[in-house]
Structures are given as structure tokens and as C-alpha cells.
Image 1 (cartoon, one colour):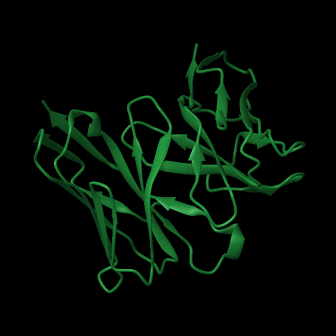
Image 2 (image 1 turned 90 degrees about the vertical axis):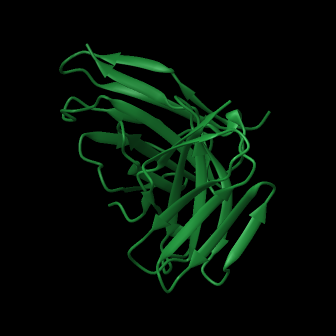
Image 3 (image 1 turned 45 degrees about the vertical axis):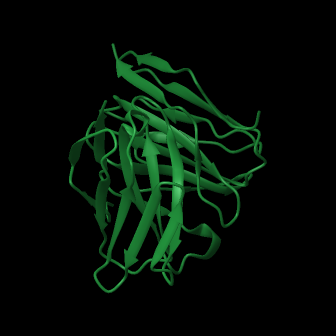
Length: 114
Length: 111
């Protein structure tokens, strides 16, 4: 079942610009994770934000979480051509203990033009 | 190097044939997962396993089977009962309380 919905579905920017992607979800969560997928490859974990956190940074990445609006945003600053990829959010169920599954969004396709 | 290896990278299936996708990890992770990804779609969970000799159905298990006889290995069989098997299949593993690590996928097509 799909929970996360990313917005926009596709984004095209110039190198050096910032890219912002949004994720909305429907139910309570334990944490929300962002992953990147290069074309034809597996996913790579970028950042995890817990339900009691509001903002988290990792290098050029900034993630925010608003549990009252059930939404998260991923900001990539000073984008590079190598950032071209699809970005997915995934939410973890709150009550499943170690058996917690992830529920995935449909992804945002980011193209960074040199 | 530690990681997850999926093989083959490309696989073709004939009508009525079962095929098996391999997933091996040397990360010593207990949990392993199989996902299906269709174009323009997110990941859908097929099966997952939290420990050796135990596995559970995900959201789209019909037409698929798995085994978990060894910690390192979690093969997925796409049976002839799966009528629309063409997709990109991703295997992942996860240490307790941590995010998932993914292999580079197997692309399955029908001949």
C-alpha cells in the first residue's frame, strides 16, 4: 500500500540551484526516511528523521518533518549534475517493533542540468 | 567490501516457467526484503524475513515464493502463477534499528 506521495513528480533545475521535494503521508509514523535511486540502480539511504524531530541536516541535505501536517521536505542545496536521480520518501510504522516495514512513495525525478 | 549482491542483472522468462532471483549479503544483517518496482511507481513489498527460517508475505506475495535457509541468502522465485512478472526487482537488508541497504536489482522480462 502506498502512503507517501512525493511532490513534484519531476523537477528540472540548473546546477548550483537548490532543489526542494515534498512528501506527504497518511498515518502516524515512527520515522521518515529519504532514499536516492540512480537510473537502473538500487536505492541508497540519505537521511532518517524521527517523529520527534523537526529538522535534520547531512552535508548539502536538509530534511524537515511536520507531523501535524503529515509532511516532510528534502532540500538539496547547491545542486550538482551528480544529484540527478529519483528521490523517494518512506515511512516506518509506529507500532510494529523490530518487525517494522517501510511504506514507499512514488518518487520525485530530479534532473540537474550542467 | 560488504554489500548486497543480486544476480543476474537481467533475466528473461518464458511462459509457464519459474525463475529464481538471487540475493546474497555479507553484512551480517538479520532482516532481508524483496521489492518490486514498476515504471513510475514506488517500491512494493513482496516478502520479508526477520530471521533465518522465517519469512512473511508482503503486500503483493501472490505468484512469488522465497526461502531463508541461511542468513546471507534470500532467493526469490517468480512462479508461472505471476501473470505480470515484468519489473525491476530489488533486494534489501537491514541491521536492527537501522535503514535498509539495497542491491542493484534484477530486471526481469518476458520472452
